[in-house]
Amino acid sequence: MTATTLPGRGTAAPSRPPVVRHSRGARFLLLLAVFLCAACGLVYELALTALGSYLIGNSVLQTSVVISVMVFAMGIGSLAAKPLRRRPVGAFALVEGVLALVGGLSVLVLYAAFAWLQVYTPAMIVVALLVGLLIGAEIPLLMTLLQRIRRQEAGSAVADMFAVDYIGALVGGLCFPLVLLPTFGQLKGALVVGAVNAVAGVIVVVFIFRRQTRRCVRIGLLSGVAAVLAVLGTAYVLADDLEVTARQQMYRDPIVHTETTPYQEIVVTRSTAFTGNPDMRLFLNGDLQFSSVDEYRYHESLVHPTLSGRRGNVLIMGGGDGLALREVLRYDDVRHVTLVELDPAMTRLARGFDPLRELNDGALDDPRVEVVNADAFNWLRDARQRYDAVVIDFPDPDTAALAKLYSVEFYTLLGQVLTPQSKVMVQSGSPFFAPKTFWSIAATIEAAGLATTEFQVDVPSFGNWGFVLATPGDTPPPLRLAPDAPRLRYLDDAVLTAATVFPVDRRREDVRPSTLMDPAVLEYVLNEWENY
Image (cartoon, rainbow, N blue to C red; front, side):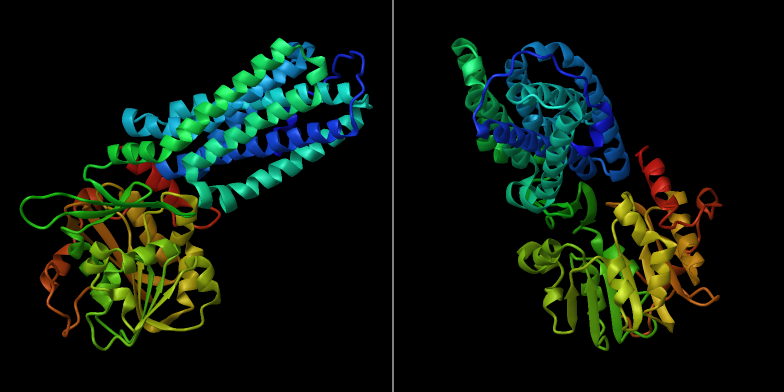
């Protein structure tokens, strides 16, 4: 149950059988069941939205679909529960048992469907409908049971029930990100909540209404709940193996490292090539971030044109893998580098995972480097230091959280840490696969008062990829390398000169700049990449 479901809850006056005398603790136990059911219901809702955001992206759409489908289903469930109020004890225990099974297994089932069947959204809608129907049936049944303990005026009973319901929703909503995800992860967290949900039904049947329930019914219901707990327990024991197998199904190469953080799912794969260098790849929420075979093309293009002028004090935003930092540190006259990366797990991996540490040359341990784990937008609001060069290496803006880092407001804040001679480089996605996204990023940077020079390079693992070089003022910055640039494997001035030429079908389009209130870049990136 959640606070978002009020309009769909059935509150019609229950039937009025004789009130049976109960101990003083019976009402408390029943309200405790309400509390637990509300907490579990909200966790199911949050788990479905979080899983969709990890696997599909577009967190706004995932949240909207899950909530709207579940609220609709709750209303139907409330109406469908009316005939069940004639036998509310058994009906409630049955509903909780089925809900515990469906809700507890929901994340595991959807993850498997995504990995093996490549089906997610239709399966998610079906699961959300089932969970919503069962949650919607709870309140009418609980209200009937509450009146059987002590007859109460309808308005007062509703107030008591919903007050406990809201408190349970609050606790469930806070426990999901603060306790369940860090402690159990998504798959096991849902299974634990399912077990709690099943126990809530046991409390009502065994400890409150055992005298009003026939022994055979009681034994049947308890056996059913025990079976549900056995299924959930077995799934819990097998969850790690199932997760590893399902996750590997989604990646071509063997997985050598994986972890789920409060911010993202990090996966590293490594090929088992018999000739040549192994191909190590980093994925965040399923999106490729680099391949060790050709990452130098990307990172040389991202860093070295930015450092063609002043470079004593450098800011890198994103880039927690340390590969852009590796390129910056090739200049001996770089005195200080500030690396701002949201996820501390990513910087720990760059420092402590030997294959990645070898690839980035141990860049994060260089004494010139200061690592800051913080949200880049909020960090900029308080930043006072000025930087000669800024390298921005965020993932593509395919979520609302990332889209704010490609907004006019963000680049305006960035202007506060620039000098008149500073250069800024922004990775800007693919001009071929997502041209509107690319040119919207350029338009957004210009709307913040910076002049831009756009260019494109070829990175085989990505395809055609684009960057925007910017500087304060009205004069576009020249795209060139510093005279004392180190010897590079891919980039030289001739390549950069050619890189500024875009084919006719990918030249600048009339697109909107992106703001916090109008995240145009999110709209563009979702519409363009869905075809690839």
